[in-house]
Image (cartoon, rainbow, N blue to C red):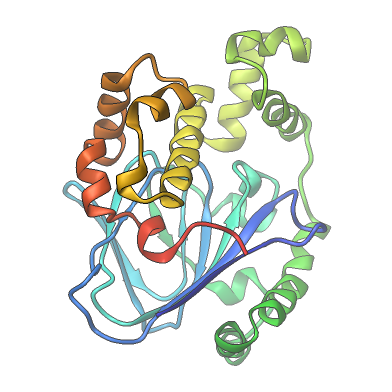
Length: 277
């Protein structure tokens, strides 16, 4: 298995957080059905036309072949990775799809996976897409530079209206400001902030914060051995009232208690990695 994660260039960093690559070349029962945690970001996933994909949450299954758009999702999806596959992923900043006219119509709802005709979004043909996969295997940095060359066309028709401008300010303030104090900091009503945020991201402020906190916590846990995790300290570090609160939170978000999660380590971040290079 080959995988990597690379941050976006400064030129595209406002809209794209990073690029990632995963290729599984053999059929294996091990780690064949990893779980994908909730994520406020959309991912555009480039895949060979005949590669199958499957995302399952409870009784809902999103399946298809080839490239697809994974929209922001509050659910934990179970993936079918039992067969070989190749993915190049583009992880957008939360709300970034609102700014791209080519993708605005693609996102119809959160919690869904939608098939895409990639050649209509990016001016490249199947031969060039195949070349990107070859570069991803051998020259990751060159692959990203070439992909960003084609993505430059999106920057020319970016939508930057009052809603996207306000939401950018919200993201900056959320790093240090409670939701209840945003209106005073941004000099507008809480209703205006909530309305613009939902319009741009398809999420409420509380939904976004909950997913961002979970992602940060899982990144933190990924870098530590199970035996070295102090759950009581972790609860304090991530703002939970106590350890039982943390247990209930993880159970609700990923369907596992902390102890069971530490034992299984079955999320995609555990199997494929989650630290940018």
